[in-house]
Length: 149
Image (tube, rainbow, N blue to C red; front, side, top):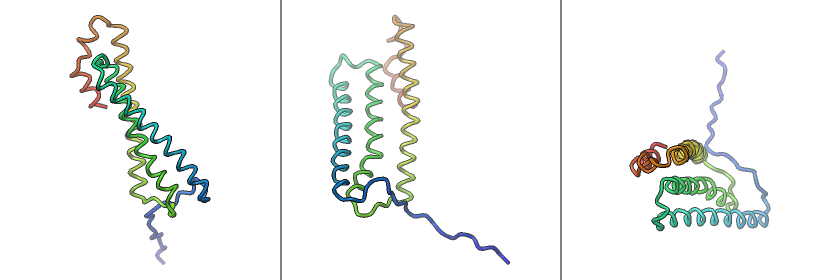
């Protein structure tokens, strides 16, 4: 006799993390929306200020600008789906959507860790080689290091 195998297929996940009460969900939606908007506007302001002020066109601020862009990607990866789940009647997320969200979050986490190493290298050069800092860490090398992350 041939044993039967499970032939089921997972196509979506049911998210049960928050309350099913509509009033609670609307309060949570408002709180998370305010957090999301403040994060987007704060990081957007950092990026805009660094791009507009020519005194901030140094390697340290260039890498801080890249870090702010990564933070924008972080919150945009997770928060919109959370906001949709708080308002929608269905608490399901597709398997592909969940996989893509987790992949993007993990890739951004790895990118941020590598960027922290690059920023530490920047500070190392600034502290230990202050006279040749701008020669060693020029604009081309900053771009190469940031693209490499």
